Length: 361
Image 1 (tube, rainbow, N blue to C red):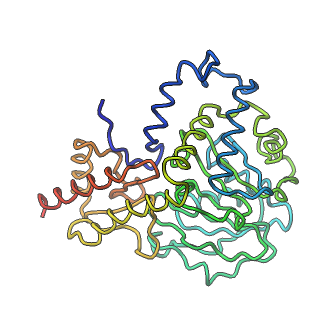
Image 2: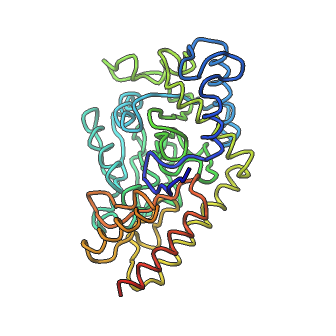
Image 3: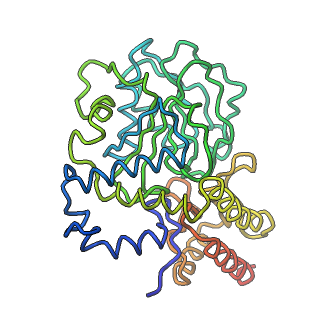
């Protein structure tokens, strides 16, 4: 068997030890006589799986006791609606930082539920550089402030959180969660689609401070209320059972094999440095994100020629480097080097890029 190096922005590569264990348990989980895929979510076996997954996440991220962990379907995009429907219950106002495509989508979705303001935007730089949030005065009476911490398409990431005072910060961490330690207490709500650093697609993890769970806007459906998930341990209906099972094993891999989030951060910093150092020295490839805003997870770059970019992606795939084509909105290339991408994968990619550069001077 020959596995490719998958640089997709998501669904992304998963840790091989996790895949190997999942394969060994496909026909039978433990001594249950069945696969997790076939297992009732009401069974004692599955209740143990989901409880253990939450316990592992709390330990790995050091989540305070006054925060709830919710497992929700619909991906991160469904949170674009759920957040305003659940949190716009005070002043009816919220501030949004628009730093890329997904934060713009979140903003546009929220405008249907209240008075929503763009407090800061990276539009003037073509989203290659993040806005300076230290210079922003946020609405002190807003119900929340929303940011997308890591911008998958443009390859940028906020290194520092905005000072929102007593206003809760709601943050999309889909493409950077579990990549390094975070202080959960600085957020009111964290949400993340699973298919980048957590597990397979179909699951969204929400970490929410308990005092933000309760009232909702009139007409909010039962399945779009955080209290529905909180009061029923995320099992009001059938949760994405297999994705949660995989997530639990990914968390075990992070804790036991990667040294927790501190070890994960060192691993990711090493990979990013290898690729960015080459890009900064290359006479052919140029990084897409401003140096001050670079993401550790998504590295964007171009040659300056759309035709040469296309040739590079084609030849890279033949060499075993898949999904390097940039997002259709920006073109170029993008290497997503999430947690499970080994250092070897980045080293080999850089070696291929050097060879390509030599052949195309």
